Image (cartoon, rainbow, N blue to C red; front, side):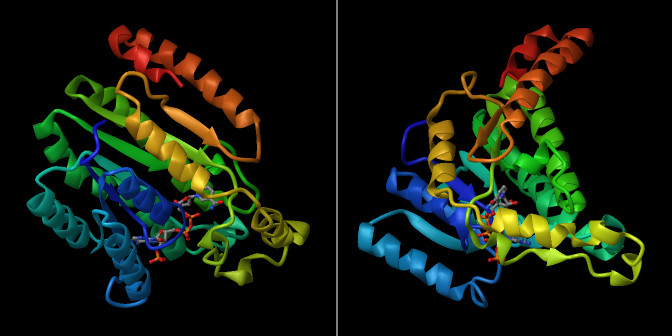
Length: 292
Ligand SMILES: NC(=O)c1ccc[n+]([C@@H]2O[C@H](COP(=O)([O-])OP(=O)(O)OC[C@H]3O[C@@H](n4cnc5c(N)ncnc54)[C@H](OP(=O)(O)O)[C@@H]3O)[C@@H](O)[C@H]2O)c1
């Protein structure tokens, strides 16, 4: 993909999202680092990006976008298209973790995590796809997790949100490839970002009294994950490499970082089974895009 093209990243105030936006801008992309509360709690993060953009003469700008809010997503996408004329890449990165006994997660908590980690990408993709279809090109990147493939103890709803995200990302790929639009999944292992400071806990502790050791799993798992040592820049580099890989040659899923190696095996197995599913429905033409 030639530089000067337009990339929009959600949840770019910190962590992977911010690194992806900065890395893309340094490679010559017109990068929109979207975040919620640009004038509130993220004002400092937004002005840091402005400073970097000025200092390094980059096309990098913070735009207000809360992925849980239809109007916010729509108005951010309209603003970007008005300014840049097109959108070439969307990185659905915004997300957070929720830990604890699954029964102790309230319905409100369960709905809220799905609204961010899953419906956030649905909103974004619905907002940008008319522009990408008009352009007959585009790329949807979905930042999933190892927990998008396996169940991490005490993280039932987080995993459910990422499994849902992966199913949808894969379906988009098959439906959109004929129009020059690609959809891919990146599955990071544990990396030391703000994600572990922002973990929400299951709120209804009245449900946990018969669970014994199970109710202590969240603390145990968080201690292990929170000690992660990888460099989050690895994720930004993989995303940029993926953007620069031509459509038709991109892997559907990429597992990056430490953790359960078996996820790569699961991806390979699922690729084979998925090809059979598509061929079984007479869709041999798109079965080759199950690759990866
Ligand atoms: N770090 C890891 O070990 C790891 C592993 C696997 C997957 N992931 C995934 O990677 C993605 C990025 O996480 P990270 O590790 O970089 O952690 P992070 O630094 O906490 O970044 C998460 C970002 O999502 C944003 N966000 C949350 N709710 C939002 C909303 N409603 N609208 C817009 N933005 C929202 C946060 O914004 P605020 O600043 O406004 O809260 C923050 O910028 C997440 O989807 C996470 O699940 C992370």
